[in-house]
Length: 331
Image (cartoon, rainbow, N blue to C red; front, side, top):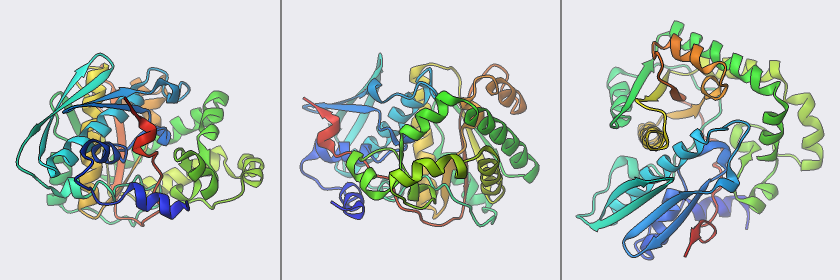
């Protein structure tokens, strides 16, 4: 299977039978940290359970599994939207570490967000700098509406630049952290063959970088992947964006992290449906010592800033791969 074959297979239009397999396939197209795909699905009758796969956790960048549970929330949202297209209402309930999604018959209901699921991607590229119209901004904010979740929209250039300062500070701290760098490199896929072999991870071309044989790319990484170079790249990317969205929950626990994921996924799908691109810039929330300062700068007090995303008009990049439903379903 070629890389493009794998992309076409995973992102094919939604089919009616087999229902549960198709719902899981669309759920796996959700955003997730480092493209680790940290989920396990179990389907029994009209219930689909989404459980965390802790073998795919990232303890260096995500020591409390915050991003992992946000990723599960993103998958829940995709599953619910896909179920509606097939004539099922999804009723998710958080039970401990798991999310149990009970399906009940309902009139089929398509939506622009559901249609955007196969096309959505995190676009780590320079955007064109154009502002977004006020009505588009309202639609993006509305997409994030979720109980116990608040949205901070930043479009003024001074505010965007201030967030960029925190992103660069966080990026510097991470790149000086040997454990973080080892973990990041472990999830890098330097060429199409490596990406297809694992069907996960951070494929170089999906981030705008060239594909190279791993034996060449790994030694070159220390020369090309530098703190100053990455900071310049992030500054340029953020400066080229139309704005930034920060999501924060009322409480910091697994149920609220899952709620953040649902809001986050809807934002990405709404942006895609409107012809926009977006990318995560989560460094200020990932570095624990920096997070309180970033929260204070946003006026959040003791609340935790959960997710930071930039958005704007930008290019298409190669889409990341996903493991097949057979590899993530149990029972």
